[in-house]
Structures are given as structure tokens and as C-alpha cells.
Length: 409
Image (cartoon, rainbow, N blue to C red; front, side):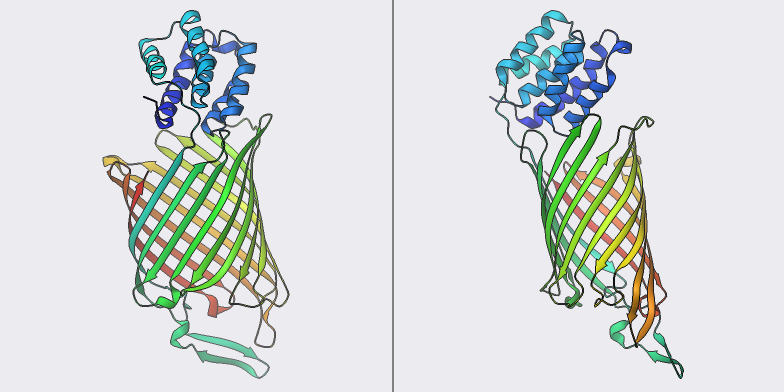
């Protein structure tokens, strides 16, 4: 019998906590190196964790936690002989409690299987109501300034909001590609309206995510490719690169700061002169507590295109605040607010709409999740969007309500 990796990992986490209690004198330990090793384990970088734990043991040979963590990491990598040697050292040099001795005995009995990549999957299905499927204008008329004076036009029904209900389905998969934390991922999402099928949409994205460490600095790089369809037709394709840098800042417990830089190339298959490259630089501050999570981000955006695109290139800002916490009866609640601005560089359409476009989009989201069974969630989500612009034909409001079921493996 072999212990699956999904059983080894919880044991490793238990030993991470217990190892600290076994350390004889935490005040003199090189805490930075130990914290680096714990973070490497949490991020799946097992080879990096092994190297850091070995360096720590060289400095502090009586650090029992490091010996335990190293033994379990070696077992997860499939190095059975090395794990057995470390277990023997722990039993003779330290005084492990009964729970740890039982874990070690179970691991010995099962053996340390060769490294096997972990995979996670999830499927989602749901129904929703959309008050403005087509992002129709919030005003029923449009005033055009002309040399002879303003002229008011009544908008046709195609430009006004259309309400519909929809069915959605999605899925995502993540799989380890290396023992040091590199992941491959794929995501799919499809939505079909009951009546307005020209606004049906589907998207497929796939990519690779890799963690790195440079001293106390952490880095995650992500590359992805994607395609989007609209109304049953191939609409756009995307390529994205992103880097997430974590500097070693002296922040309070549970808090982390990251700097994100990204570049996205978008090419439209049915529209001319709309291709663009978008660049992003923003800071992200997160906090984790028992049953609680919060994040806030603020960043600068630049969207470069040819002068032939209506409005030309544009610049803007992006901000986001999110709060999540556990609630009674097993519920989890989440609130999020997002604001984004765009400022064009050229008149939107010279001779027709001479204004330079200024756009401010605000959205609020509330989510309530309930675990109906093991690995299954019911989720109720409400969303409101408020888009304001200096060109009234583009202004719109929207509200959505969606109930979905999610299965996780």
C-alpha cells in the first residue's frame, strides 16, 4: 500500500506546526530561513524547501521542526531512503509525541512513492438573470453637437437595454508540472441566453504558472493564451504575461504585499482597427486571519492601439477592494468593489463624435456560498455595474443575479 500525495501533504502541514513546538529555543533560531522554507512548502516548491531546510539544519542542528519538515518533504519527493534516515534521527535525537510517532509509522508502512503530480478540478453550472445583456444605453436619446446647434436623436431599440435569463457552465483544471511548484492550468466558461443568442459567449484559456525565489524576494510568472467567441462566432484571441513580485517588507502578521506587472495582447477577429496591447502595473495588499481574508489593489493601466481605433490609445486607473469571511451555519460571505477609469487620446470619431472619451466604471459584487456536500458548493451572487461616460450613448447600468452549483475535486 502506498500513501497518496493528498495524504502526505496534510501530514506535512501538521508537522510544520508541531515542529515549532519541538524546537528547544525559538528565540535564537534563524527565523527568516525557516519562514522561507515554510513558504516554499506552501507554494509547492519542494526542491527549494529541501535546500532551505538543509541550510537551516546546518546552522541549527537541534531545530526539530526543520528535521520533521525535511523528512516529510523528501518522502513527498519519493526519496524513501533519505526520509527513513531523517525519521531515525528524529526518533533518537528528539522526543516526538505519540501523534508524530504514529504519522512516522504510517509513512514507513506505506512507503514513500515517487513524486506524482497533484491535480485539481472543478465544474460549475448555474442559472442567472441579466438586466442589460447588450450593455444598452441608460438614456433613450443622444444629443449630437453640430455647427448649426445640438440635434437630439432617439435611439433605436438595438441600443437600449435588453433583459434576459441565461444558463452558464464552466470548468477549470490545475496540474503540477514539476516537483518545484510549476503549474499548468486551463479554464473554460460558456453562457447561453434564453432569447438573445447573438450575445451568447464562451471562452477558453490555458497557461503555465511558475514560482521563483531570489533570496527573500518571491516571484510568480504566468503566461497564458485564450480565445473568446460571441454569438457563436470566433470573436477575439488573447496572449498574456504577468509577473507577481513579493518584496521582503516588515509587515504585520498575516499581511502580504505584492507588485503585479502584466501585458496583454488582444486581437479581434471580426472588427478592424480594434487590436490593442494593454499594460498594467499595480500593488496588491492582502491580509489573512482565521476565517477571514481581505485585499486591496491600485494600479495604472495603459491600452495602446493604432490611431485608427475610435478614440485611439487610452490610459486609466484600476482599484479593487475585497473582503471575505466565514459566517454562521457554514456559510461564507464575500463583498467586492471595483473601479476603473479610461481616458482616450483622440476624438472618438472625428466629424461625428468629436469628444475625447472619458469612462468611469464601478461594479459591486456580493456572494454567499454554502457547502451542500463534500466538495460541493451552492453559490448565490449579485452584481451591479454603473458605467458613466462623457459620451452618453455609451453610458449603461446593469444588475445580475446568479445561482450556481460547484463541484471540486
